[in-house]
Image 1 (cartoon, rainbow, N blue to C red):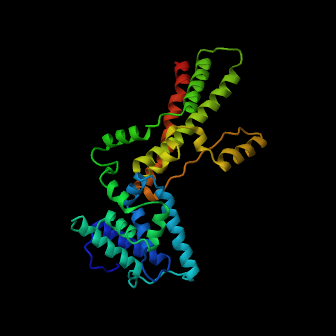
Image 2: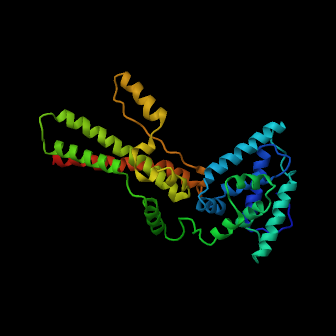
Image 3: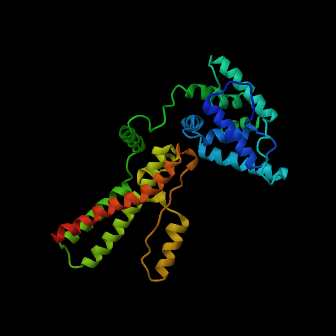
Length: 316
């Protein structure tokens, strides 16, 4: 691990170790502040990610940009292979940022440098690589210090059912899309026509019911992915509109347009597909990736059960 005489909390030391791993993977000769910033953003239950998100920074976008910059610098330097393990130390600018972190720690009368203090150390080193990128996102040390008082603990602490309920309330604070509500009403009306045998063209009602049911299930499928990701720590899904159940937010040029059009030309039914983009770096634990993947199909099963109720009722 990179050696430093500065006192670090366990999570800060873990971030420094992960920064070394990132530097090794990209063939860097030393651990710089970009590798450290990316490691902080990728930390499980990342405090830095939470703070930047609170400050309205697209932290997932920042992480992707930092990662791309690291790879670009490695390519330009011609370091195509991984560095040998155990030989990497801190770069001069990383040492400077750590020195600023130590000064910040003393200013705040703390016993050790944590994730917040590492971030503040980079901001107090505007000449560092990480400091320059953070400045482009208009992040200041004063904002980070103030936000620490307001950023709440990540969801998932304490009773999981209470945490899930609180997360659901936060996720749905912008309400449900009127488009989704209209789809549910339309599908319910079509189900009523079929259930009570209204009208002279049941095939038309059946087709309309299938289309409406598919669109509703599509919204619930993608919402299941997004809600679980939000619960797991990826709050970027809220900014992308995935938590409103609006089908227009789930469209994808290939899945929603090209493939349905191809199926229609081949004589099939052009059911549209959907997509949501999850920032897996923001998920607090590896298990949340599996939960995010499983949530969509589970929502489909629930929707299938609800849509089958009219037919089950009719057969009794």
